[in-house]
Image (cartoon, rainbow, N blue to C red; front, side, top):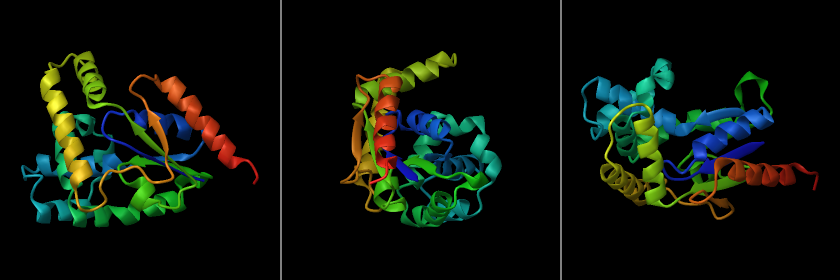
Length: 213
């Protein structure tokens, strides 16, 4: 079974995807992490994440060590990832990796959960079940602010909100694979719902889908 989860930054899709993968013992792929790794590799090389030629090369030679680098979750990395993710060649370079993961999950798993921005629309349009996880920008900015300050770092809520809105505009406005809910996706608005409620709703929908037709 392939489970596709899409949505904007800080909506809770990653948390939901990981919990579903653990619950059903499916393989999990944070596709956004691939773009973050590209962005991080460029920042580390002191190359502008807006350099399309360099971004394309970086996406073809990713160091797997970056996937677990703590800097992968930094705000600067997220901003860089949003920029490289808008580049058609970068998306094309990473598309095959994502599709192979969904069709042949590692470790003999019987299913895969992928989260990102275009899983249900481009990467896995024939996924068995699709979710679009969202929340209003103000709530997503508040979550980012709380996450950053909880680590003992300083943060400015207004700056984070502006970054969230700018990232939404890039993701939704790009010509190649824009962020949009698939027509057959289940909408999960987490603005006023906690993760447990969202998780239970998703599990119920998946288990219903798994029943013999």
